[in-house]
Length: 161
Image 1 (spheres, helix red, strand yellow):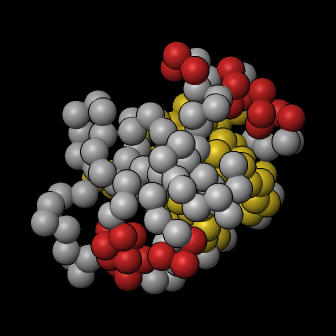
Image 2: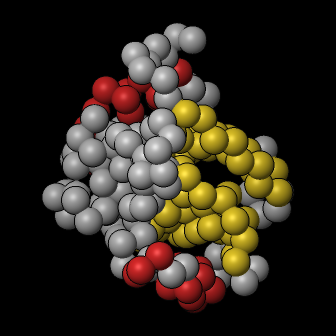
């Protein structure tokens, strides 16, 4: 079994990334789906892809991860979610032989299956456009099973609670 902390769109908030990694020190994967607006060394231990607001060009635009028996496609989403259409995400996932797409950009928490591909967005660590409080995901992967839980941040954020 592998444990994942999944975040996106922290928009220059280095502290929330540090607080979350301290709150959850035993994760197997720390994944950031872009728009950190920070450099790679500033977001450690997070593995990240590049968002439309990221200026560190060393972040890849997409990343494929095999975790247990599942293949995950990590993208920010701005190239694949034109006008809210998810077909670009689905097409890219199938092209990369992935069953799950982790994406950000929309600032809206999301977890649904479309055309056999599971699409997951943790929402934003800065603000969610659906009116909910900032959010992130804790996920567990065991073989080919993926269990996803959304968590909403209440400010002031206390990582010790």
